[in-house]
Amino acid sequence: MKLSTRGRYGLMAMSHLANNYGGGPLSVNYIAEKEGLSVAYLEQLFSRLKKRNLVKSIRGAQGGYVLTEPPEKIAIGDVIEALEGELAFSCCSSEEGHNCDRGRDCSAKTILDRIQEEVDDVLYSMTLEDMR
Image (cartoon, rainbow, N blue to C red; front, top):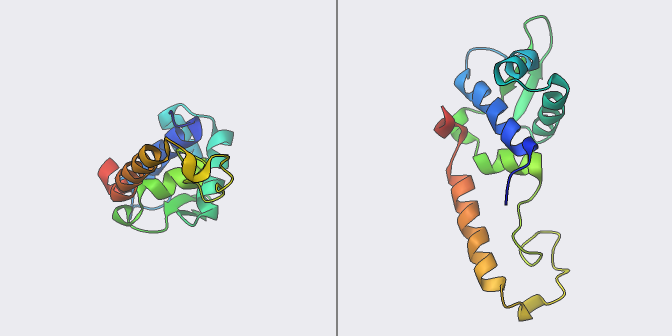
């Protein structure tokens, strides 16, 4: 399994906001230049993050984006989910799931549920503070 560029680039961008927390907004242009990323693509990512209330935009010449909460209150899992959608290792464990053909007869369900639990534990125990 591999995170898409949405997840990877989004974490890179959120790391900049975490490092600058309390120091005012950072522009998408600034982050794009620092990371060598497309401004248009970052705008799409920030739009997703804003919809999930993880960042807010500040308008004006000195505008940009800031975190809505301190870095230690924003879980990595929330960022990944905002950008990638729900991470589910089996159709049985996804919120939309329950359309699994095998249901309870799935021989992999137990291990896939355990993997899901472990991954969720890691993603939701780490915060943006851990990236600083």
